[in-house]
Amino acid sequence: MTYTLDHLTILSRTPQTAATFYGFLLPRLGFAQKKPHIWANQTGLHIQFGQARDGTGDYGRYAPGLNHFGFSAPSPEAVEALAAELEAAGIPARLQRFEPGITALFIPDPDGLRVEVSYYPPGVPPVD
Image 1 (cartoon, helix red, strand yellow):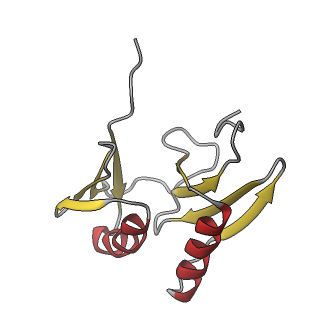
Image 2: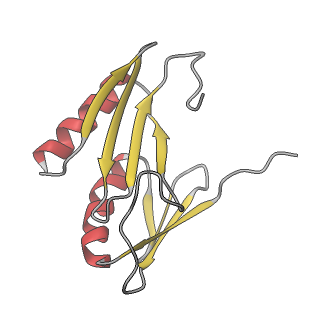
């Protein structure tokens, strides 16, 4: 039996700042807003946003909790185009290339959670 990821819940210290960030990014990744704090794509993946509790710590690369989440892009050009759109909008992102032919974009959200958008050539798995 295979289980599939159906949703992610992301908590933010400043929901309006997160809403602006994800409101820009998610439509470019094929998501549509279903409710004020819920987005979904055509495969049924839902992302829900909420308010973090006061006094909680920042994102940590190796800290417990969600480390990052990644999306597969259809081509390296799609990743590069998204990088250009983010740069034009003043949203920081790091574009990198890895062997064998992977093009990856790493985008920190306003609370430091990383969003990854990567192209993987045919036959190269997204997680190794």
